[in-house]
Length: 346
Ligand code: DAH
Image (cartoon, rainbow, N blue to C red; front, side, top):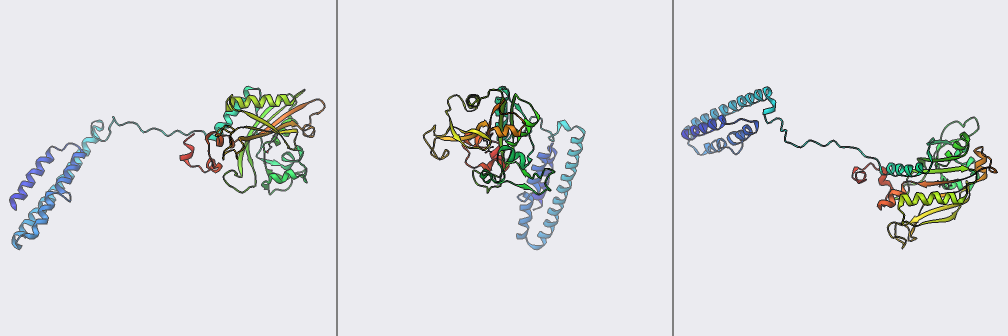
């Protein structure tokens, strides 16, 4: 037994002498002091020895164990001191490792679509303006030819802001569409006017795969002498050509909005079924993307513009639908759940 222990000591000391790094030292520790080391095997074997031999051999083995632990600590200290003196040469810095990439943020898909649309409309001479998200009911409804008793208000249940009414008796709400900015711009500027208004709008609605209480719209307004429906169609056709591509068919249909006369809705051919009808387009082959029309004379008047002299067109488009259609996303809530697995795809 004594020979065995001496052998072990010699072996361990020899091997320690050639250790030059922390990694090697750790391997040495596992080999000579670890759970599966020869030392442990010797300790385990002690049980089978006669009592007097067991005592001596036990003391010897423990001494060796203490000695090796002491050497380990010394070597550790020596290696640390060496690496502090010449850090570049030790294993603490591996300059061949690839760098850690900095994680860059990116634009939200809705922001991207808004930017793209902004580029198209500004190239056609429209100016980008923004308006308040908290609005007077006057601008959101009255001035847009939607009086208090008008049934169109029912389709736009809103969030009312609990505030004392303004000096004019107006109440505050979260705007239900970007159209109020038509009035604000007409009040301040004189024609010719060409503006687009991107922004957030709010509706008091239950949430599901196609409805969320906050979404985005882009409003357009052009007022000048002699503006006709042909200008409206030309502008929106050109927008569609550039945004959806020249192959996409576009459809106009008569629709009603209190602030335009006549009013239309514009639909583009469904990207998924190419007009044959599918689940995404409700089997119709078309997807409605905006409402539009010739600005109602009463709306021009509310904005301080003489409808006898000027005419104009307006449109309002929902933004979330566009990336929804483009990428075939089936749940609008994904845009606002902050799930990076979803957002990183854009
Ligand atoms: N404001 C309407 C909505 O939110 C959309 C709209 C329709 C805007 C016709 C317009 C328009 O400017 O002319 O449903």
